[in-house]
Amino acid sequence: MSLLEIERAYKGFGPKWNRTEVLAYINLEVEEGEFVAIVGFSGAGKTTLINLLSGLLTPDKGSARFDGKPITGPGPERGVVFQNYSLLPWLTVHENIALAVDQVFPQWTAAQRREQVEKYISLVNLTPAANKLPRELSGGMRQRVSVARALSTGPRVLLLDEPLSALDALTRANLQDEITRIKREDEATIVLITNDPDEAILLADRVIPLTAGPNATLGMSLQITIPSPRNRKTIAEHPDFKRIRLELVEYLLKSAQIKKVTLDRKIVLPDIEPEDLSLPRPVLPWIGRRGPIRRSEIKTAVVEVEK
Ligand SMILES: Nc1ncnc2c1ncn2[C@@H]1O[C@H](COP(=O)(O)OP(=O)(O)OP(=O)(O)O)[C@@H](O)[C@H]1O
Ligand SMILES: [Mg+2]
Image (cartoon, rainbow, N blue to C red; front, side, top):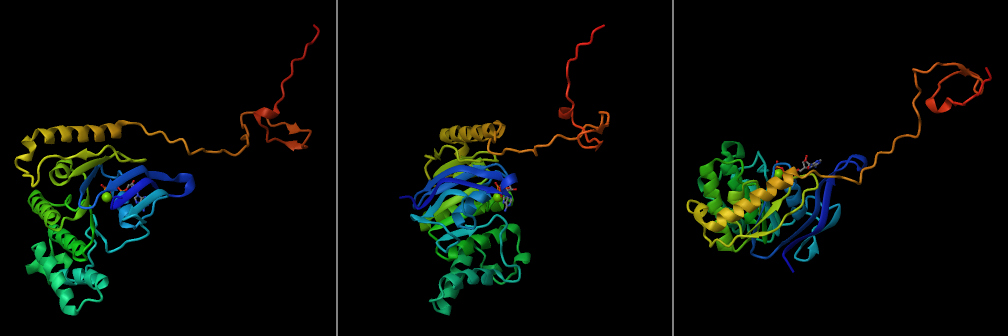
């Protein structure tokens, strides 16, 4: 049994008569200790997919399971790093992380909880900024706080929703290294959402493309056999890198070109014929007043007249 499983899941938004199927027929299995990257275009449904795993959304059809049990809501065993940081603006770095730690480990002493908070602040190299508010931090620092908060509760799975896409190249590289270290040292199970094929191949054990939406679905799994730890400067020369990258990018581009056909929306028009204003409006003997008159009400007959 896999640690995370999504089986034949569908998720859409909007009322029944105007619903957009964002995800269709999603199947995903993530093993304990595995690092899976999901790559897709903007708006394809990546956040929606991670929300099915975090429990913030439930599938319309199909199922999402953690450790064999249906996912019915968020839980501390699944740490999430949200795309938009989601820190509480009036709390410091320390307090933001402490909030999560206090909630998950209420049985611990205050000293143990403080130690846990400090450990993860130091893990993401933010000790000097521990007493700063989010607005006093750069985007990269905020993202690192989010990572520390997600890790501090000791989750079995880390769900990362594009944690690096808003960062400059240097900060991005630093955080990529940190994620690799966390993976190696904690043997964490990680699902990383990204729009960058290179990043996916650099970091993950397995990469899966998410086709363009609507009705986005997961494509074939690409196993990354390039030995770890990988070096971002030399990885591009590896023959497997080029092959996998080409396969991934071609698959994604093709999925964006395929026209989607939706057959389940049928528009039923009211069974009436509009009045035809171009027709004469005689007094109609059978209703005793002028029109309305419709084409179907005009009867034609062929009459033979003798000359
Ligand atoms: N709560 C919602 N209500 C209505 N539509 C939604 C909702 N959440 C997402 N959508 C729609 O679902 C589609 C996929 O959104 P989603 O946020 O999952 O995309 P994404 O792949 O994460 O995009 P990005 O790369 O820009 O973050 C979009 O068209 C979006 O408008
Ligand atoms: Mg998103």
